[in-house]
Length: 378
Ligand SMILES: *Cc1c(COP(=O)(O)O)cnc(C)c1O
Image 1 (cartoon, rainbow, N blue to C red):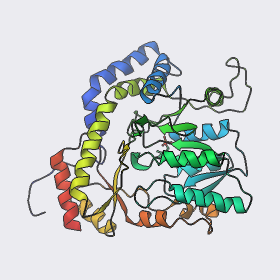
Image 2 (image 1 turned 180 degrees about the vertical axis):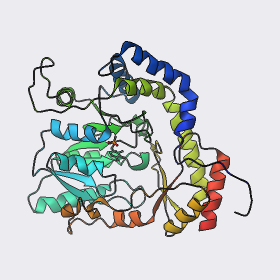
Image 3 (image 1 turned 135 degrees about the horizontal axis):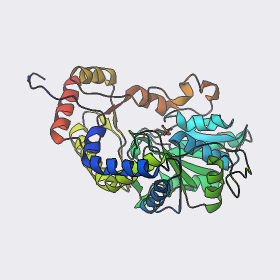
């Protein structure tokens, strides 16, 4: 970059521009909550649950405190316990496995696909065969829609059904995405998601939700998230916990949901342009033709990762390594690592992956600048 033009700081995810777009609506919504003061379980919470259920075409939406709780609440509602096995991808954020360990169950890490970075159906099937040989039957599979692309649900749902294993979808990164024309939220037995500010649908703090068409499961989850509530508030029929979405966060999410479809379109336009100008230089992620990703992150593989990151930083372009190690190599989870179920692709990806600025308000000229710096670094 020999030009002397001064570029403004480039945000990795531009929440500020989004907030500016709907600022007065958000302020009004927050003000309304302050007026009625129903800060916990206020009307906005149930209004948002209904709206998300319509948006996702799923019967039941149960909001909760965060995405990690959403995963844990499902596993608890299924009454999984110590010694139960839950299969998870090795290449994901820690929360996916953390929820398994939180209830005392055992995660088994399965490798991901080298091109989509999502759980590989072949590797999943192989892992189930390996487990079967030692008479181990997993109780559940958690698939993750990494970076916003839904996993291969045709095949993963089939495998789960064939082996009679429950399927929980970790859609923390993929709200707003579709697979074969169906919205995320409707795959597997149940879906958990997060409204952490940097996720595609984020609030102004922590938040999460569970989506399912299973009425009995939805009822159990509602009870567990409110101290094991039975017929009324002080009737406790099971051991539960406290996991709620604040009313203010729900009010903010109602406003954000109004522009969410437009934002998903914008994200896809940004990703499409990156794909066009970066393919041939780096290995961009393969998106199946029947998928619309929510592009939580734009990530690619390159042998020159550390150099690209350094040069980008030098030019004021933030980058991130999601994720630097497969989970079975992290100290907290290494005791679950297995030599009979290899995770080589996850390891390769961890060494080469880099995420660059991605958000609905990224301008083409900023993308051009980002891409020119990356090309220079290569
Ligand atoms: C963010 C994330 C979570 C956890 O969500 P929180 O709301 O931060 O608890 C779980 N799984 C994946 C894949 C995530 O990216």
